Length: 393
Image (tube, rainbow, N blue to C red; front, side, top):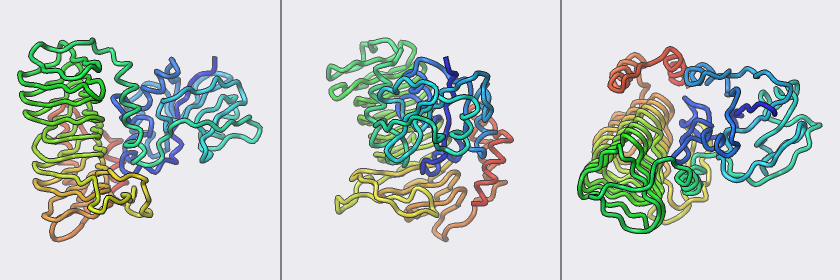
């Protein structure tokens, strides 16, 4: 059997969400894309292939080879921008499937032909290619559009046992899975009318919180008192959230512990949204939202009426921060102003009422060390090096 290599072709225009991780490591539902791909294929990768600037960082997260081919005469290459939904056709050696835009979704190739895809992104001319319709991530708003499907697929595969504590008030008939080792206080309401609700081991749901399905609260996450978690929401591991949240994904280890609205948004890791931070996810004109995924790129039509903010890793916002519809905050930005920040910010910028200036990396690393130490982590050499590079963009 060909050995599996999951690769990131680097062609996704996903803004700050792929500054510090390959596309397949993104939490695109209750699970990361790589986990959904593994589940769909019923097998695990023997190696990974990522853009070179991410190789050192991703090597810290895996024991498998990174940007090195595994042993074997033939390899199954699968694009990590595939969301793991739908069925990948069985492929023989010399066969591949591509998306309508020409992106390689998967290919079964000889060891000699594999680098043609992994380094160039295209299939060799001799490969028999078939166009298939499988969901791929290209832009940040693709996540919001596919979130419900990904989330429902993950929740159906959940290993958390059915059932919940007696003190929880449940409405609706969809599955409710609250792990026996989750901490759930009185006066919690679960609305399973529109989809299942899963609360993982070690999560905490404080008094008066309302959880509407479909939603997932990951291991070690905390839902604050009287929080309203609306459908289509994923609270990643170790997050602390409060206020009102809907149709949004928190990658993990981020805080939005106080009041404020977050909707149709994507939040990276190690983010702190100050009390009263509010996102707009709808234009007053009810017109299509446009977004600039990267600060030096064009503004693009998203095809969406509802779209909030894309918040990169290590972003911090001050109390009362207002984020306009379709805002993109680059990795490591600090927002401390009485007016909304620009709709698209470069990495490692400090925005105040006096304007926009670089975030000094020595101050950034000092802050990161303090924040990450609280979770028993530290700033690795690879992360430090990558942030230094991002500060120069």
